[in-house]
Length: 323
Ligand code: XIL
Image (cartoon, rainbow, N blue to C red; front, side, top):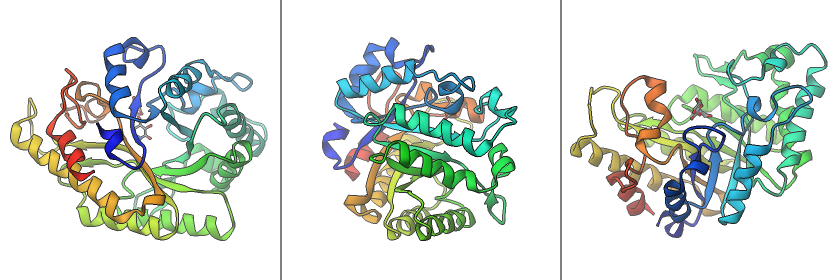
């Protein structure tokens, strides 16, 4: 059982809205989740456009149900994400907002963080604000266009004011693979620390491939953040195997390579991040058949720890061996 082997939170991302894959419709999934994990994150329902559909309307029901579920089952809840730029994630009203952006964003972050205070252990305050095109730079998102880079620190300040007990994370992808992006993020951390902007940790999404990036680069990335005294989460772990192949099913050989990959990643986390700085590891989905990667990459993928029949894959054994 993963949660009993790990001395840090072990989480899984779940669907929990009024959707086909909702955890609340699947008692068999609930049993497995309750057995193995002690941390939850919503794949979608705690993103901006779900929680804040109109300027004066917050829609907390689905997320409240998930928070209740977590509490009833002795799990912590990680909030994802207060500020995230994709066009389809930003509420329509916000795209057309013509008022005071500072006040509006502070209100958005503050209302949500206050609503969940005491029920959310940690937040991804800002997600994917760095554009990795070389040289790395702040992503020219709507928020950046309206507020410059200040939107990022203002979100952290507002979240901290609303919920001083929550750990506040900056979350991104490819920071474990693209050195220039990692460097840019480290510069942002150093600047925040120098100016006492409240930030407690970094989430490495880690949507990685079975053979990329190198484990040396992953270790270096964890270490550079840990050396700055911040917590480290592996926030959205999955291990794609079918980028260069054209597999129709997960072959035994590939499943074994994936096991080794999961094992080396968890080992790297344990060896590079001191115990007190381990915010935990979360896998981005429960069973292979529900991975977001198949839709995202438009190819078959089997990146997770469990098969669709809820049996454990070699990948699961790899995590167990590392723990
Ligand atoms: C994904 C969800 O899993 C999908 O269901 C949704 O359609 C798109 O978003 N980085 C993130 C997550 O921070 O929020 C994304 O989740 C995956 C990439």
